[in-house]
Amino acid sequence: MSIRLNGVDKESTINQESFPVKGTYILADNPNLYQVQQTNHFEFVVNGLNDILRAGSNIPTDLSVIDNAEDCLRISVSQAFIPHFSQNPIEIKRGNSTIKAAGTPTFNGGEIVLNDYIGADTKAVLMAWQNLSYNVTTDKVGLMSDYKKMANLIEYTPDYQVVRTWDLYGCWISELSESPYNQENNDKNQITATIQYDRAVINYA
Image (cartoon, rainbow, N blue to C red):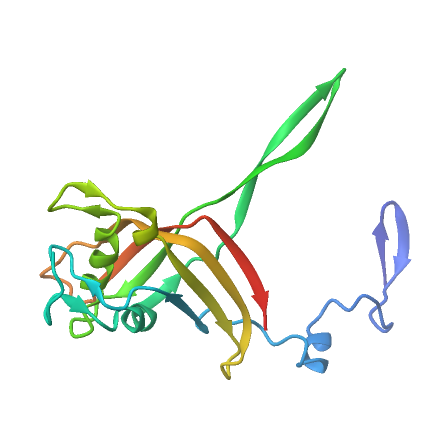
């Protein structure tokens, strides 16, 4: 049988091998190349948070110091943004035409979603980190050297070999939010933290 393409009758090619291959056979024949990156094999790690003081505390005590804050956040993260930058185009006009040049880059903030583990004190860790940029008790904004932290987004294969790592510089919490409590719903409580950062650099394993 034939088909009309662009005004011309052409014979069926069903019995002919065609390139490029459109189906999944090439994927099946090369599993070492086409292992898909899965969305649940990652870790978001924040550095420099151990021994942080709880929000509202002024001096370190056994109760006010959170000594495992970094592990708490690493294990609590359920979802994490992937860092990328955007650039505003600069338009250059001459005569009746326009060209576009690349403007300055901006790394837009992203969100991480964390499970609120009671014993690990997930919420206390997040509030303690946010407290470094603004202390509600003293009504003071903190120093960048205190609240800006280094973070890493690590992507893994299904057998947990490192695929690539994002190094995020100057991370801090600009906002915390939670869904309201609800007597009619017994779902887990999650906390969303909006993370601002200065730049992200990708590294390959």
